[in-house]
Image (cartoon, rainbow over all chains, first blue to last red; front, side):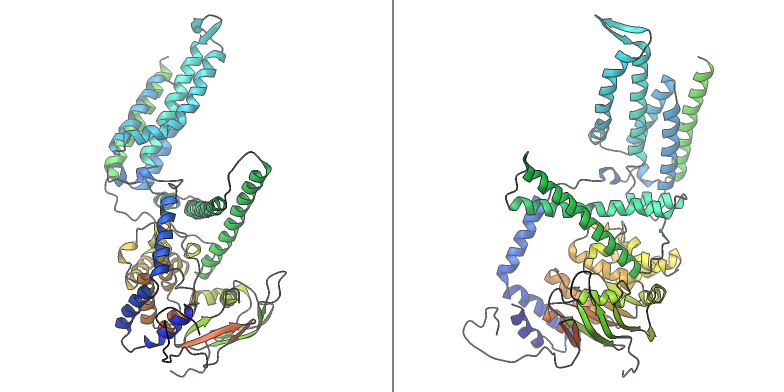
Length: 307
Length: 241
């Protein structure tokens, strides 16, 4: 086939560049219909067998109030609100915090079901705490069921932990998960986080997809040769080989990426472009979240001083 | 256009990877300003190695590397080389590491000491030149293979190099992307050398063809793609002679 092209190419060496290119493109298609079809089929198949990507950013899509706030502001307030909720102790403060977190989620117009699914990660962990703490925490019993005593401070502690976790996670979903990772990277850098750390974050994120692709290729290669994972030495060995191969490829990739960076004048110094999208809702957001912060802080101080 | 001083001049280059026989043996290469060179050679013959030696990513075990009129040996020498010679990597995923297209294209200009505004302006201009105007905010890992290739070409061109080295630029491109790339290369006015195993890609973009064999480079003008008419049965089918 190469030879055949070889013959065709010079005839394409006509003075009119544009016309001949189109002509050539068409010829290429016509002369190898079989290969092209095959290529298309394989491509199609790869797309079909490709599983959902491991990581998605479902919440970054949107044009709500929260989406249009400068990522730097969102990060700063996410940290402030999370910290104060984490150290708060009274129940009323925690409920206020939860209400504010839910308000932020509503303002970001996120899909409620998707948010619940994200929160589900915490629910499992919480269930474990609810089973263990009330039974083991010393204190005045709240309920007595036969030989079992559910302690009052234990239940209270569980409630606080649950409220805090859900609130903080909701704040992060509303403020951080609505920002793309590149915007977070830029925001962190302009907030003074060292460039090396920012690039570590951003590049990890970038190459996870490439490494996942390589992993899928290896798995596919194993599968088409009839590999069935089981409980035997052969399976363990194969999985170990696959894992090792991923590390080798990742390190080879890292070396190539570094070379490509050197070729573009990289000298150890990282630059970012900073926030670029037009962010319009900054003032309203600052007022709102500052108010929320002051309310939580005020409630907590008031509760602490009048027990 | 009869320049005397070669832009790239390699003499007696030897290189071997650990534990293998030398892949480059007494290799010589001369490129003049304005040359458009295609390099054809079998896989594993050291083409990529040759490019990496020119960029100073690999150090030859022997030989003389003279680039842009100076002998280059130390890392410092090659820093200057890398500012003025652009290398398009074989795998676009190696080249595109920033989250968005604009950030990636601006990476080079920022490293050259340009201000943010200048870097963004240069990047936009380059993207426009390649017909990628609306790509700025696209996420690099979500681009198709052909788009990745064009964007990585943009990242190299944004540094305004004097010479371009392209490592299999036409590899794994569909015919649309391929003719677009050929169009771009034909509109570039800079010196370049490209590796390809497709004769017609080289014939459409370059004016001289070099080949490599047994670790040596042959740059005689006799290796030319040529045409001759002939006919025989089932001549329509792809065939070899």
